[in-house]
Amino acid sequence: MKVWWLAGGAAVLAVAVVVGVLLTGDEKVAPAKVSTTKVTRGSVSTTVSASGTVQAQQSRTLGFTSSGMLTELNVKPGDVVAAGMVLARIDATAAQESVDAAEESVDSAEDALDRAETAQASATSTPSVSPSASRAPGGGQNPGTGNQNSVQNASDNLLNAQQRLNNAKLTLTQANAKLAGTVITAPLAGKILAVNGTVGSAAGSSVITLAGTGDVVVKAQFTEAEVAHLKVGQVARITLPDNASAKYDGKVIQIDPAGTVSNRLVRYAALIAFDKVPDTLLYGQSATVAVVTASVDGVLSVPSTAVRGGVVVVRVNGRDEERKVATGLRGDVNTEITSGLAEGDEILTAGR
Image (cartoon, rainbow, N blue to C red; front, side, top):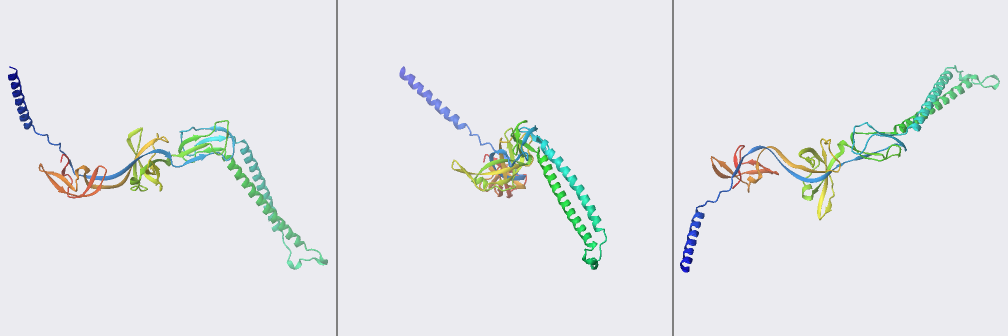
């Protein structure tokens, strides 16, 4: 009985194997999924991307022309200011007194000049004696000589009065400049980076650091291979971490000629300026830039994955056929087709 059971079990197993083989043989392998697309006309571009930080290309240190007690401070770090806005003041009492005294000196000098001009006019209007009668009888001096001396003295007095007025005006100009130096105004629109001082403390030539709105750039690091394709003036797209979906336009304005080595990799810094600086931009925040290094517009293109060895598979009336094509710029996504295809042709992009 045990032998029969074993023999029966083997027979059942053999039948199961045969049935399994037959069933497996009837299954068909599913074909690879085929994807197609149309040949379109548009733009093809290549880009190089890098990460960097937002910074001021050039900052300005603002201060007073002389030291004094800080009496007014209208800004703090991070504030956005308009050109001409008053940012801070120091005590201007002494500077104003100097201006008042200089104005009085100018007034006095102008009065002296008026008197000198009147005296010269009077001296020159007095009739003179003929040179032939320059000596009076008996060897005395002719009255005409005294008139000539009066004219000379009047001219000297006029010159001195004019010099005095010039000096007084120069002193007034300097005093006004010193008075103006007691106020800090924004030379251009920008953002306050730092403030050194508080109201009631002494302040001097370094009080406020300002970065101009138009001076904001992204300093990004590119590899040797990438920097070889960079040029000043190339268009760039800038992405900020607080809004990854927004793309800000910019352009390359500077490429460092010397690289820096980090972990045996040489990188070159490039500055990318914003065409329009976002209001919410923060200095020091990270950013990603994609610089367009080459582009063509209004050309036929297909996905780059569809082109293999200069051959594209075209679907015509339900049948697929290979076709040789000539290509131009191979972009990040699409490849330019210069001949071999027409706009609207259906091509295979996957499943070949």
